[in-house]
Image: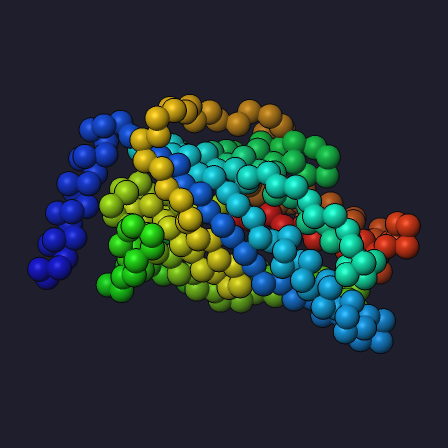
Length: 275
């Protein structure tokens, strides 16, 4: 009880301090994801399979920047140069489709706007933020200069897995638990990707085989910034965009089952849409 009272007092004091200063902040996140694809061993040898797995995991190592104030945030992927193809790639070229989203969130009215390029067209997804039924726990750990508190929530998710043995994508429903670590020292209810709703900035997220980790925080930067709502693209709801995306995915799978080649290289394309 004493610990809880101290925690609440710190949280209230921090909130008053930050909001009275009309503060801004920048958080940089690194993310990685372990990806595995079932390959037909009669068509793909161990070396090629290893090359594919390594390239996939490198493709999912990305950096993101979250800019925020007390009410709004903007989340973007940091650009990086593509690594040149080498002999070690065994003639395999991995292409991850997506990743150019600009995600705006307004915590006050619980809405978001996601500017997304898909199949050569821009879409502006406008919808309400989904509530997350977080369970606050007492466990803590140090992340950088901040004490982080643990929180979890569990939900059912649809998982799509590509099976090259049958050249198809299989969809199943699984129960998934997300673990987040947040700090009340920075009292904004925001975090990386689509995570939000905790009484402090989310510094780390672990979900399935993906991890987001905050590596840098700048509070009240000397150069002030403006958080602007994205405005490029056809306006759709999240449900409408999901339907468009699913239709185009099915068309793409129909055209590209078994893969196509360019200059002797096998092209494997994977679509990822984030949170």
